[in-house]
Length: 228
Image (cartoon, rainbow, N blue to C red; front, side):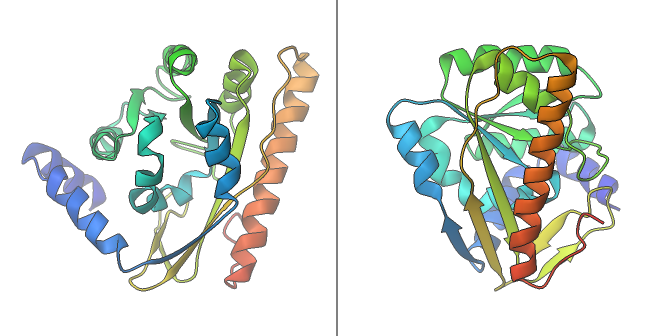
């Protein structure tokens, strides 16, 4: 069903209207943001940042991305049909799509992100996208942070009353008039030089931190098994 809708949306140029509907829909959502000053103060001083988030939580970007527009963030998006939709929508949000993924064109896209961060301040990275497994952090974030020296800002997104899609990541969409909690965690810097073992230790450390931070916020809304 979703694939059919995707094909229709691309074929008949319905994505601009879809974007406007999403923005209108998000006005019904109550949003609480915690810890944003950490990121905004860093960017306002000319610093660079990599935003790390789980794939199932990216819908909230539709209503929050305007806060980051002045910094023209980039994000890696897959070359699939669904990625084409995401690319067009993120472009309308003033997020610059860099096409590729860990499964297709990953090296070229990672190299493009590295070059992009030399000239720009902000990039987003989806930890377990675009195909999962759910909740398993891939190596791309470590490589990107290691090779650029740019600090990583984890962000956790929780919903009071979401629809949970039957997708590989159990993608979450907030229901009308529900609440969203967006919480920014303390940034960290990945060392430039790591052995193979240290690289994996960092990957597991960040994955565990992102699980614990996200699950702690989910429990505030009564959820406790979204990564099970």
